[in-house]
Length: 206
Length: 206
Image 1 (cartoon, each protein chain N blue to C red):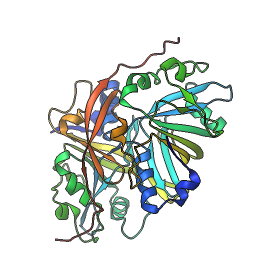
Image 2 (image 1 turned 90 degrees about the vertical axis):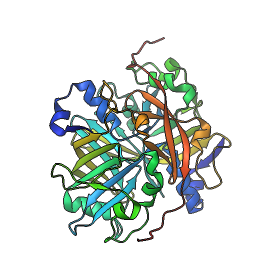
Image 3 (image 1 turned 30 degrees about the horizontal axis):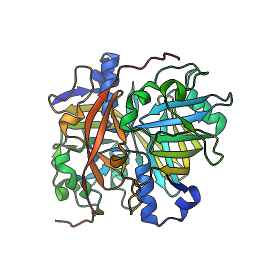
Image 4 (image 1 turned 180 degrees about the vertical axis):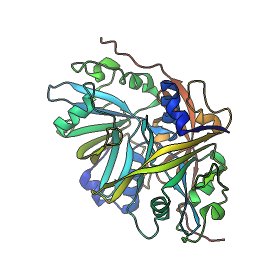
């Protein structure tokens, strides 16, 4: 096996380290976060750090990198209080990836990258019309992680829109049938194919 | 589209809600966390909430559910300070899923589920020999999330072992070639196939 210790990771070329460490957690979800600023400009940005926090109440988190001038998503969420999480399909990978570019604040990535903002039910953040799963979120807590100046942004699920036919009889979403993508590292996109499902596991000590 | 609001989610049958909300974040990584208790008993448990927190320092987090009598992974990490994160391959899905059963504290899931503990470099937590990516972690911070009694457990990467041939020239791990799985919801396992890679995105306002 190849081996790297902490010292080797520290001393790596920056790009090599970023690519390595970004693949070490495994496959990641592929989401677009949609927001609306107090200036009336929409923002759309790709995130691969959305994580399930609990089902009752239904909470999702995501990791916000150190906040700077370019952190339009963060600023809009703090100002507005609401945001959307939208799944990325295989048909829109390049457009979704392009939202990671540093667009000026007065540019909407919806327009620049070819997505359609959708407003519904008086919700103040734009959903992505092209997404087969669109979730309306309310910010409920911002947890600062002093170690590296990141934040765990915690939101409560307010609205869920799912393309017809994707909700299984047990509540699961058949993401594969919606051609939902996943991400490996910083820039590689994958299609997931279902290979196995197992019943609730019970201990049977040997 | 099908629509669920917050009230509908609250009122759902519990299993339906758990399945739905667990698929709402998208695809999830498939990892086994290996620990060693002060009683000398190893523990191995499947987690789908490992998240990249930063590359410099190299940090990974995972979500610990509300701690109870059965939280052997948590107890061992607190006692020991070290743990391992190991990727799950398609060849070991059923065994990996079985680690989620409620085994008694004196039972090692390595033994009960058919994995081989591997000790290396004096590290006090067991790696999973069957995994193509094995990461040695040191707990650096436990962030309590009062909202739902969960915790973000933050660890620093101390050791990385990767199967020969999986590290690309740019540092990325070719997880697909290692047959690394991903998870959809609570119990469905998927194979990921690379479909696209894009260069670093640059803004080109239209």
